[in-house]
Image (cartoon, rainbow, N blue to C red; front, side, top):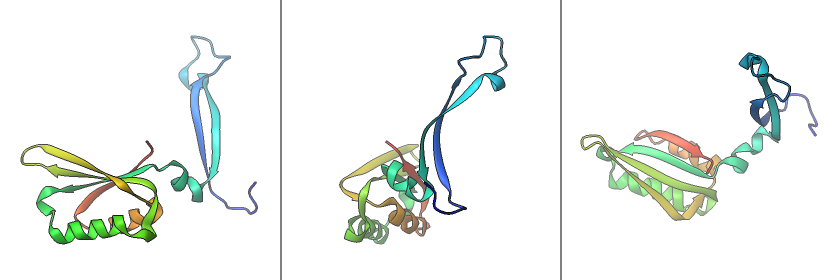
Length: 129
C-alpha cells in the first residue's frame, strides 16, 4: 500500500517464454514478465544486500588506511547484517587476494558512503549472496 504519490518501488521479476507463444513467435513477442515481489525502494538495501566487497591496490595499502577501514568495520554504530570483504590487487604480479571479515557484519547504508570517501578504494560492490 502506497500512502502518497511519488513513492519509488523495486520490482523483482523474471522473464520467461509466454505460455501462448509458438516456436516461430519472434522473441520480443514471446516474452512474459512474472512479478516475484515489490519492495519500497528505501528498504531494498537492507533486504537484498548480503555483503559489501571493495577493491584496492596493494601499493596504496598503508597502516593509516588499514586503521581507518578497521575503525569503520568495528564501530558498533555500523553493525548490521552485511559481510565485509576486501579484494587487494597486486597488478605487477597479476594477483588478487580476497579477505572476508568473519565476525564483523556491517550496515551497508552506513558503511558504503564511508568507504566511498576513501580515495584508495576504487571499487565498491554490494553483493546479494
